[in-house]
Image (spheres, rainbow, N blue to C red):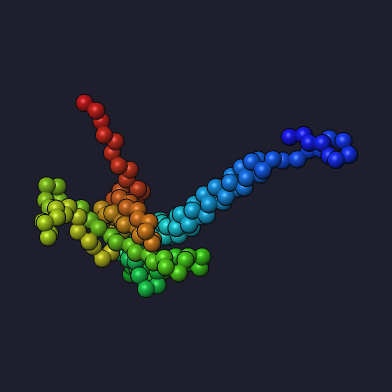
Length: 177
């Protein structure tokens, strides 16, 4: 907007509406940033837990092949670490929790699917998996078929691991008939 000064010269200025619009946009963007920052922190915590899980899984499989002896993978909730143990000792994979918020806690649950067609009815709920305390990796490169549930705060991720390759099994896509 162009205005004239009291001396007759033209000067440039912003109107009150323009200034309020800029302030409102800054407030909107800053609130979106603050809201997304919390979810980014939780996502980073979940990613660190998952990356340690995959490191421990690869190590357990490699040690089973190299040592030609079964290896066991467990999760220690007190130490927040995965433990790979076998005939030649154990190795810990600690999750880096330095940058975690104080209220974040980690939980890992290993489960195994029940045989096809079998299920349990527990307190009125149909259950097709059972919790297992550990996962075993064998000298031929395979492992027990299992699922792992990774929980950090409110973030939860379930991964099904292929017993032949040790990689994540992706869910089957539904095929239209």
